[in-house]
Image (spheres, rainbow, N blue to C red):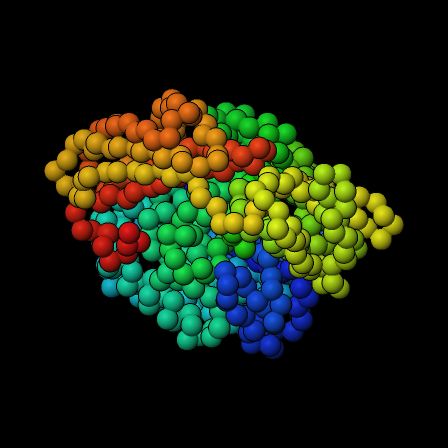
Length: 547
């Protein structure tokens, strides 16, 4: 799991076309959050940003702000914008000089302020130091309307929150939010949690839901699938705020295991495109791939590119210590091509009651969209001047049917820029899904060393079950991986169940239990799933999602 530290911002624009005035005199962008989306100056915006750090070339560290190469930042942002991204995400604060470069570029920023995630939040001196940093940074950042969100912490650990106190943690975040709202009115505030460690955290404390998510095929990603894992967390929070996936990616270090490092260049490229599709399918409206260029500094020796996973997540690599420009990897080209048209709707694994919404955010060169079904053109339309298209496909009166839709994007000369397929289910009547129930009779982990669990499946439907149930146990101690298991089932049975047990490691703060199974109808497939969170005592009560 990436252990980030440091600068930069995230951002957005609609398909790279949301222009922003370069003058810092406009004090704030007009931002509205509704229906799970950002609306900026009245326009619906899909965040397509990229993690970016200045001062992170070979031999450099991104700590501190003195002596930044503004010309290099300017060149980087131009390359980022040309690839269809509409902003950057940072971990810690940019200087005002750097922020001026971002403002002039037309990109938006989700602006990191590095409140350390491992300090004692119950210490009044720590709290005052954090608030002082916020005041110092906002003294200049509030002048720039490229800042559309503040990101005030990255990946706080459950064990640490338990140690310093959940209420103290909540109080620090609340005070930070209130101060930022006071100093920069109208700008949302959030943190970056991580789906492997803080999926239980009640993010409704914040204005938007921010989280890092790495699909190492354990935990809820193993049972639910990456898209459903993200959707399930959002649904658990219940208020439909915008979701920012603030990190996701694959490292191409030579050494690694469990997909954390050891990936080939081609595997990285293919994974990034799949993650984009999964995140859009999950209903998230902000994507922040991790990240622009390799960080040689992460192992503590900035002049040496160590073979450690954290140093090789970049979409640009560097030949040697003298290379300050870098060379794009296949993942960069894959994302640049994918960005031509980002399809927010329809979504895979979804049922539509014979009315299928089409929503696409396009790059400026896209002048025509087509939707193809069974080798015929169902829809042909042009995006508006901003690259946005919204419409509907109607299958009025038709019965239950799996549909494989191909969405094509063309330039003004009729050249195909991108094609993507999405499989949905449509029908005239509401759907009845098979059900999966996860039962854990324990309500408190205190004093327990074993947790019995029962999984029950019921399928009185037209769907076909897969041949296994996947389930996992995550004890949330550090970055320990969840224990993943599978159980063969009989797809022909209408009802079936089985029991299991998990041995708790010593002093784990909580236990997350996940289960999932696949169901099919023709080409359409969907994962049905369930999850439970159990805690040791009441330490998390002031900060957790209430089930």
